[in-house]
Image 1 (cartoon, rainbow, N blue to C red):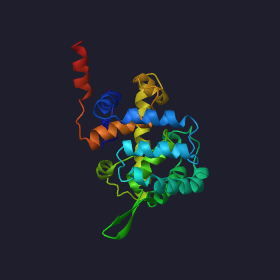
Image 2: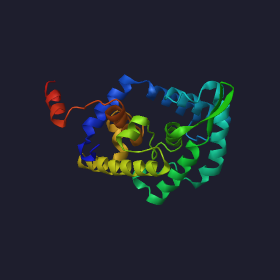
Image 3: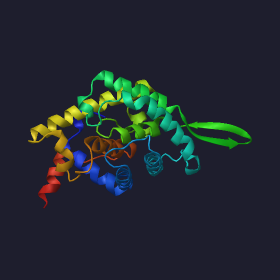
Image 4: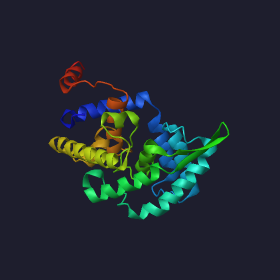
Length: 236
C-alpha cells in the first residue's frame, strides 16, 4: 500500500463499504456497550463480552465451548501486562517507538497463549490465541492506538505475525495516520475530528483506518480515484 494514495474521500468510501459488507461494526458497538468506558479484562463479564466479540469478528478457533481456556489465558496475560501499557487516551500518532515496542512484546506473549484445547484421534492438542485474535484483543484494549489485522493484511504488508512484524506494522500505520492528519489539517480540521466529519462519531480514527485496509487489502476492492469521486458528486 502506498500511503500517498490514501485520501479522505477513499477512507469515506471504504467506511461505507465496510458497513455494507460486514456486521462487524454492529458487534463492536455491542461489545463497547457491554464493557462501557472502563473496560477491564480482569472482570469476568468483560472477558465474556470480549470472547463473544472475537467470535463475531472471525476468530472461530476460540470456540464457545473453549471460552474458559482462552479467558483464563487472557486474564493471566492482562494482569501481567496491562500496567506496562500507555494511557488509553493516547492515539497511535503520539506514541514513541519504545511504547510501541513494549506493546509488540506483549502481543508476542499473548498470541502464543492457549486459546483452546482439543482432542483428535486420542491426542491432545493446544490451539494458540494466534496473531489475528491477539491483535484484535489489543485493539479492544487500546482502540485509539493499536490496530487489528488478519492474514490477508499480514501478507499485504509482508508481515509474518511475529512481534517484530507487529512492531513494523504499527510503525507503518503510525506513518499513515500522520499522513491522514496532514490531509485533515489541509481541510481545516484535526485528525481527531475525522470520525465526526465522516458521520462516524462513535468510531476511532484507527477503526476507520482498519476499515480502509480491510476493504482494500482483505477484500481487494479497488476504490475510485479522487477525480472519479468528484465526477460522481457533480452528477447530483
